Length: 250
Ligand code: BTN
Image 1 (cartoon, protein in one colour):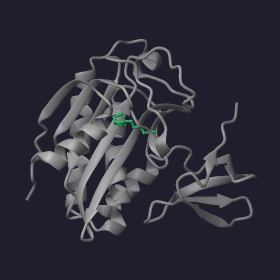
Image 2: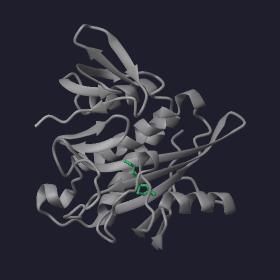
Image 3: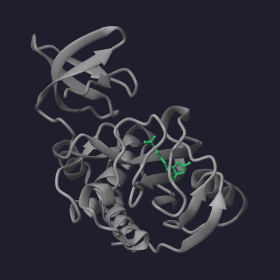
């Protein structure tokens, strides 16, 4: 049976971070699965690895969704990251070409970063009790001031001003549909779509790990979410997040 997720939308004028806000809400209240906490301004938006997430007030999408993926084994938790990235990928594909997922879950257009995802899971007694999925998508921002690598917005890419809430509806619909596939256990399909959407898949590029720079080809991602790169000598190596850096060529 298909369980239809509803998406109550909570609009917040300003908050530190929608992930913090959502985490406080699920701690203190009953929050329906699929609830979206959207804000116009984050005063302490968080990116991966304690980075600050830059977003000009009112120009972009900054929101968090709440899920209760208690059906998902913990060893498969990277699946959640895949379905969220795929849902966004599908929605953004309607507006621009060359959308890809830069492992593990950045949304890229060409060589530029359009959006990022910050997932915070809470695990209790070996079960994924709740998941706060924070999404930042650059929609109308024209200038970026932080040292974030290669930021871009939909407006910079298309010269068009977008209604953020229309994009929000499409992104949420995309995520719902992939989340349903996850609930149905369609792991192979999700894996296939995720891998075929990967940035720089099957292309030779430079990478850095520690002090070593090498050339290789991304060939996929393993079941625990490590990136698999085939080096020029044929050896396949696996990397956890932050163990390997993509080099940009001009
Ligand atoms: C990344 O570094 O790529 C992840 C960025 C995630 C940013 C979003 S904006 C909404 C939500 N609230 C936060 O504080 N972070 C996420």
